[in-house]
Image 1 (cartoon, one colour):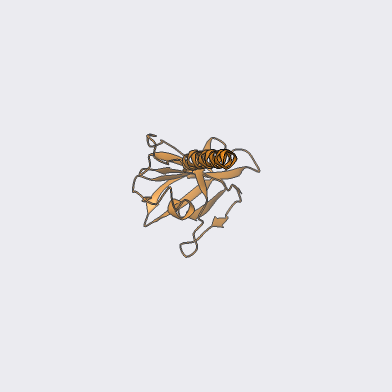
Image 2 (spheres, rainbow, N blue to C red; image 1 turned 60 degrees about the vertical axis):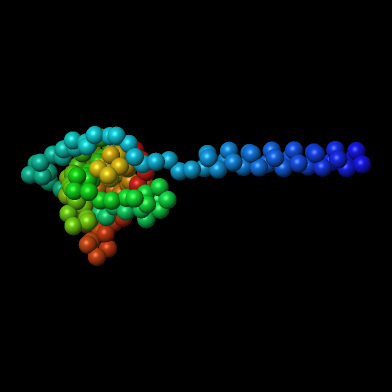
Length: 156
C-alpha cells in the first residue's frame, strides 16, 4: 500500500509541475502591444522639381489583416503618414486619402538603391517599417486603387 501511495504522490507532483510550467509559457507567448507614445515624425522629401527620375505607389495599410489578435482595434487616421526611404534618405511622404496612400517617390541619391516604406500610425502612436523592400525604378508604378500594394509591417 505504501508503494502505490508513493507512486501516486510522484505522479501528482509531476502533473502539477507540467500544469504550472504550462501557465508560464502561455504568458510568454502573448503578442506585444503596438501602442506606444512616439511623436508624429517630421519626414521631408526633396522637392520633386530637383529630381530627374521618380516612381509612384498606391499603398493600403491593413495591420488588422496582418496581426488579427494584436491589431483588432486598428483604425486608419487622417494624421497617419507613409514615407518612402532609401536608408535614412526620405524620398517621399504622403498622408491618407480615401483609405489609401498615394506616394510619389523621388530618385535616391545613390544608384541601385532599395526603397522601404515606413508607416506612422496616429492610432497606435508608433512607427512601422515594411518588411519588403523594392528597387527604385524610374517611371515604375506599384499598386493601383483596384489592386493596391499591401505591405507587411513590423514595429520599427
